[in-house]
Length: 176
Figure (cartoon, rainbow, N blue to C red):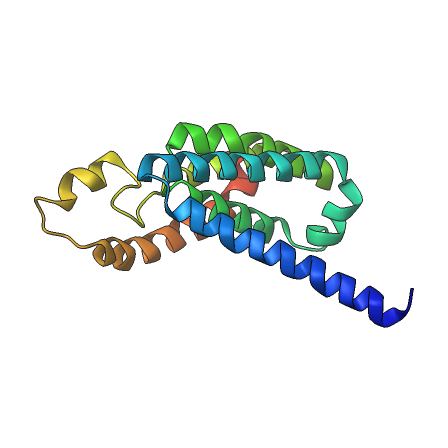
């Protein structure tokens, strides 16, 4: 085989893959709304389970990725991920998914798991960014004539303040 043939074969394979991908996206867009929501939930679960298993099995990669970070920065990143996901998932589901991730991350880094689990527990409570994040948000959304952007405007600074407080205090309170 000549190099040009290999390049042609590679381009052809990529073209087939991308046409399949675009057809799949178009097919998914035609699904009913509940089916799309279920698909996204299952996709989220798969990603979280993959991350958890990756953290448990590939400790050198975890050290390479976040090993040089300070504890508070790791906790802040963990808080941010959980706080964003809890805007769209239930609190219990988010905690059930991310508590094992937090424990695996702490064990992979050789740190006590208590601050990591406490960060996850605090992050799922701060669902201030969207009206669907908490039941109370949804209750005042319609009667108060709030818009989606109102929750983002008020919820973003509040979430950032909570994230900073949690990242600063959890290592001090839960030393492990």
